[in-house]
Length: 73
Image 1 (cartoon, helix red, strand yellow):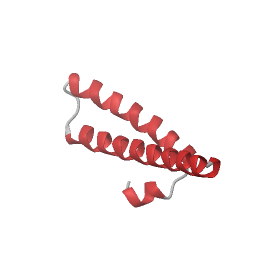
Image 2 (image 1 turned 90 degrees about the horizontal axis):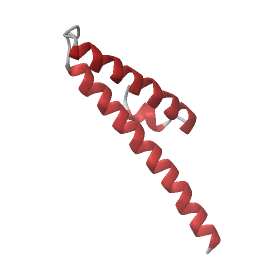
Image 3 (image 1 turned 135 degrees about the vertical axis):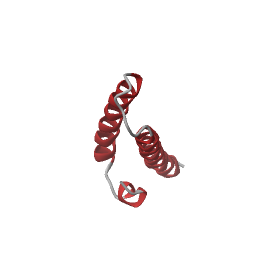
């Protein structure tokens, strides 16, 4: 998943993706503990996507708050 694709997503899609990736990370961690995971780097990739989604959600909700503050002034 590319960051530009994420930027074009709605907040609902981002929340759904965040839930999905957190579950995937949980499963990868369990597999890593049981030595069933061949590619440990997948954990890093999933964590990176989670961070990108959280960043976008914070910027989108932050920009909405700024617009509301400007309208009240």
